[in-house]
Image (cartoon, rainbow, N blue to C red; front, side):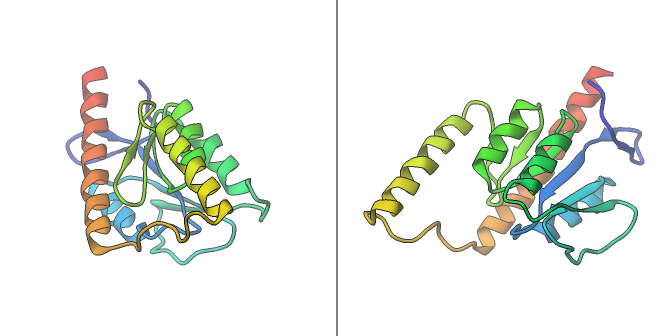
Length: 167
């Protein structure tokens, strides 16, 4: 397994984090983990976003077309990437490329659970369109932020161990 990575102090290689950044509520948590492990971060958005800067963070601004950001993220998603998104169809595309995918609330999407997530999304959309169900997801809470941070940290460690085992 080959990673586009940066070395960190104990010689282990680490992946890059690609963020679907337009509506991402956990960018600060991503920056925190990226700093801790020396990870590169790629922010993909339809317009320029403020970020802490530095050589670890790349800002990619795409056209404002409906799927431009998703297409760019899917293009960059490889086995060496952790993709951060709340977009379930995008998560499925990235998984097909071998990337790891983490939702904003700390749920890791896998080939095993993304089909169910897509079906649930489709069902809820139909119910909302018919007026049977109103509203959307629960408001983003502090516990969601904490769960995300814990899961991202855990995922980075898992990928580091896998890389070490492959060497």
